[in-house]
Each structure stands twice: as C-alpha cells, then as structure tokens.
Amino acid sequence: MTQDIQKTLEAFFHHQTFRPNQEAIISDVVAGRDVLAVMATGGGKSLCYQLPAMMLEGMTVVISPLIALMKDQVDALSAQGVRVGTLNSTQTYDEKLRVEREISSGSLRILYVSPERAVTPAFFQVLSRCRVALFAVDEAHCISMWGHQFRPEYREIKVLREKFPNVPVIALTATATERVREDIVRELGMKNPREYVGSFNRKNLRYEAYEESIGMVRIQRIVSYVVANPNVSGIIYCFSRASCEEIAERLRRHHILASPYHAGMPTPERNRIQEGFLNNTIRVICATVAFGMGIDKPDVRYVIHAHLPKDLESYYQETGRAGRDGKPSDCILYYSSGDRAKISSMLEREFTDTQRLRIAKGKIADMYSYCTTSGCRRKTLLSYFGEDISPCKNCDICDRSNTKPKKIAAPSGDLSKIVFDAAKDLSGQMTMSSFVSFLLGLDRAHTKSSGLTTHSFYGAAKDYDRAEVMGVVQDLVASKKLFLKGKSVMKLCVAEK
Ligand code: ADP
Ligand code: ZN
Image 1 (cartoon, protein in one colour):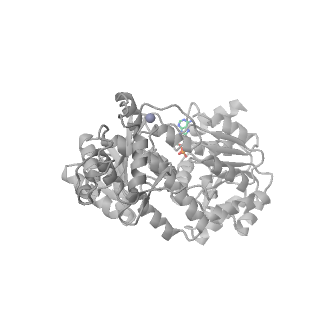
Image 2 (cartoon, rainbow, N blue to C red):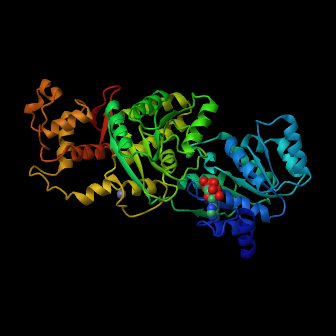
Image 3 (cartoon, rainbow, N blue to C red):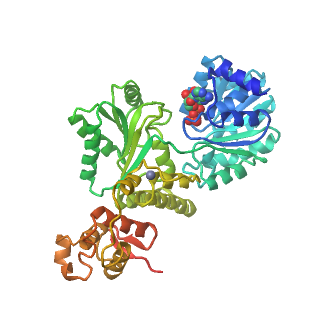
C-alpha cells in the first residue's frame, strides 16, 4: 500500500515527498480508520483526503464551510483531470441537478459540499444512490463551541455518520485546543480515531507585543516600523475600516505602496488589491480580518496587529500568514486594556447566549494574558494549543531576559511586593499608567493634584524602569490579584478574595 500511496502522490499531485504526518494520516485513511488531523495552516491538509480519494473505491465527500476555498480546490482538481463536483447555495437548480446526476452515475471522485447542504434529507437520498468512500470534514473546529468559529450546522454532521456508519471519517483543522479536539471526536461520533497533532511552532516567526494605549503613538510606531523595513510585503490588521484607511493613508505619505482592505469595499476592488499584493505592486495591506483567507503569498515579511485580536486562535492564524517561505518574519502586536474593553462590549452585543459569551470572554482573557505575560511569547502561545516547548530566544521577552542582567532588588524589598502593597493602599484611585508613574516617582499632574507626592509609596520603585514596573502590574492583573475597573477610565483595584 505504501508504494501505491507514493505512486499516487507523484502521478496525481506531482510531489516527491510528504509533509510531516501526511503519509501516516493517508495510510490510516486508506485503511479505513477514522482520523483527526490537526495541522498548521499550509501544512497540507487537503492532500490527506484528496490522495485517499484517488485510491479508494467510491466518492469522497468533503464538507467545507468556505465557498470561495471550495471553488479554488474544485478548479485546481478539475485542471488535473479529477472528476470533482460541488453542491452549495450559490448554484442554480440546473447545476445542482447535473451534479446530482453525476453522483448517481458514480462518476465523481470528490464532492465538495457545504455543511448546510450536507445534512439535508435530500442529500442523504442522493448519497444513498452511490458508493461513499470517505467523509472529510474540513475546518472541523467549527463543530465546537470552544472553538473560535462555532457553526451550529456543524453539529448536524453527526447525522451523516449515523446514516452511513461504515464510511470512515477524517476531520481536519488548523487550530484546536485539547477541549476542541475532544469535542470534534465526540460530536462527529468518531470511532476509535487516530489523532495526529502537528507542531504549531513556526520557528522563523518572531513574536513581539507592546502595550500602547494612545492610538496616535501606536500608529506612529507602526509607520516607523514599516518605513524602516521598505520593499518587503506586510499585512497590518486593524480594528475598524476607518483605521485601515487611516494607516494606509499615513504610509502612502511616506511613499509606501500601501492599500486598505476591508469588507466595505466592492469585490472587484478587493480582488484588484489581492492581485496587487501577490505581484508586489502593493506592498502593505491594512486590513480588517476579512483579508488573508486563502491567500498563499510565501514572502510576507511581517504581520502587525494594530489592535488586540479577540482570541489566540485568530492571532495564530493571522500571524501564520507571515513567513510561509521559512525566512525570518516579524509578528508584532499592539494592545491596551482599552482594546480589551472594546472587544468585550462588542461581544456582549454579538452574543445573547450567556454560555457563548462566557466562552468568548474567556478567550479574550487568554489573549490578554499572552500580551501581559512575563514568560516567552512563543511558549505561551503554543501552550495554549497544548504544545510544550522551551523558551525560544526569538521574541521580545526572551530578548529582554537575555540582554539585560536582572536588576538587584531595591533595598525596600522585591518589586512585586512593592507594587501589590501600594495597590492595596491606593485601590481604585488611579489608572494603571498613572499608578506606574506614581511608583516611579514621576511628578505627573495627577499625582500632584491629589497630593500623593508625600504618600509613602511615592517613588518606591524609582530604581526600576517603567517597562519592568508595568510588567509586574500586568502580571498581577493577569494573575487576577489586581483588576481594572471602570468604563472609560480604568482604575486599578485590588481583587477581593
Ligand atoms: P492547508 O489546507 O493545510 O493550509 P494545503 O492543503 O492548502 O494546506 O497545502 C498548502 C500547500 O502545500 C499547497 O500549495 C499544496 O500544494 C502544498 N503541498 C501539500 N502537500 C505537499 C507535499 N507533500 N509536497 C509539496 N507540497 C505540498
Ligand atoms: Zn521567547
């Protein structure tokens, strides 16, 4: 069988070797086992069901949520001479009828179908008229509420399994935490599945995150970075359409070939920008999250987030668009506690379901802890996906701990004790940033006007630098010993036990 698999790889897909895990996954699928495959984006998931489809007797049914990606795959496979069809909501009645006839006559190798369509009785009928070799469930994390793209219709896919109990299932996803993996296996009714989890570690990506609450300063820092790295391609993810436009405009003033990209732009315009990005007539895209799906540009040298993303899954996926060619690339993130509040209130409008809101808020909390961590970023990010690595030496935090010897603790005791004791004393009186200034003994307006310059903790951390003090405050917030309270002005408070 191994030989047949290798032959098929060369003959149909024109590759010589397999990517990590592909061969083992394909062998299991061809042998009729249920498989859960977790592979990073670009890892080559499609081959894991397309290759078996060429070897197995009968038709492989691929359930895929994204019509655009479905179309790309169908076009690519047809060009290779594979008999492939699709059933989705964009088709006319006649087109559907034609595809259904092809299915019944047993002439299709692969059928792509949307999840909505896959679970209709009409579809079961169609399938019962042919031999089904395999079900492939793409983007399988959509089945789980704990995933970041839950789609209720995915829950229905189980019915297919019940109707066709002898057809093996392969579930594929690029992002899945332990919990999501368990959900996938259970919700699809997978039988004794083999699980393959590839590494999520993208060693050539460098991770950095900086707190920057002043919008204008944030934009200036982004502009400086881009100007200092000219003639390479990059993506800047922005929170709103307006900020896409604004950042692009500022970059253009510096003669950078930048363009906004967001859902408010007409499709032809968006296609033109994508084309331009691929052939380097546009260098920098300032985009809302709408950009990047299905874009396979190998030489994106940086991905900058001008705003806190809503979860680590999205962050991982978006930064994953950098450095596909394996060359060093930067992933830089700017955030503030204000960003977090903004996303929270957005989610409160989006989710009426309390359970889903709670999960979503938990995800922002995890995202925020990534930002405020004092440990290696890569380690923090990967541990979220259940992978354990050593600190990476290629992130802002590892750099800091490598280049700067640790300061000897001030005579008055260790920094986090100072910070916590001072916070207890001043709970609810100031914002995080004024609190840090206060500890550093900076004579700011707020401190002066409230007469706090005579307070016993004023200047208690003057032997440290701002970043260190801020880091400790953020750690205490992340570990829930301190929290921020208030609507517009977030005051630092001590958490009640
Ligand atoms: P994913 O769905 O995991 O993001 P794809 O299936 O789209 O990834 O594959 C990403 C790219 O890798 C595609 O261009 C594909 O042709 C290529 N690829 C997949 N498997 C191999 C292989 N064994 N050898 C070389 N290229 C491969
Ligand atoms: Zn690191």
